[in-house]
Image 1 (cartoon, rainbow, N blue to C red):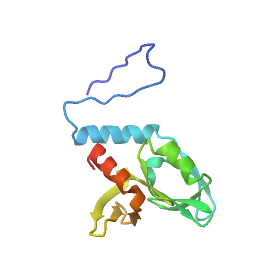
Image 2: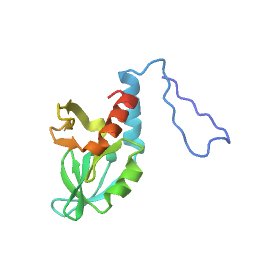
Image 3: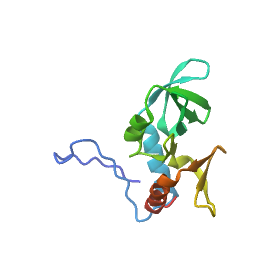
Image 4: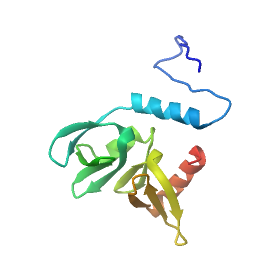
Amino acid sequence: MIIKPDIDKRYKQIELHVCNEELNDEVKSVVRELHEIFDETIAAVDERGNRCKLAPSEIISFYSEGQKVMALGASGKYSVGMKLYELEEGLAKKTFVRISRSEIVNYRRIKSLDMSVTGTIKITMKNGYETYVSRRNIARIKELLVKDNL
């Protein structure tokens, strides 16, 4: 692995490029680790009322429950003080995609997709959580699959 800085005035912010002749497991691993290091954290409250910070890479899904926005993480449920559209704007460019009016999922945590005969898509996450893509978001999920080869 070669690591070298490239200092030039054309860069307005720090850019990290991972280059290789092919997209293999090592490249995916490096990119995943960089995301975990540099992704922002989200303020949340756990089920016991303790304040905490969540890394987006740990989140499986953000969803509406009543008047609250909840985050489903690997270690439980959390209440988040942001609206879904705010989360979508900030996180969609990274690893999250809206699947319905009330849910955004981390597509790096998707284990499998089941496309049924009726035209719906059932998503199974790596932790076993299952959810469905609404009809209006099916095209977005299919576009994502083609783009990232999930």
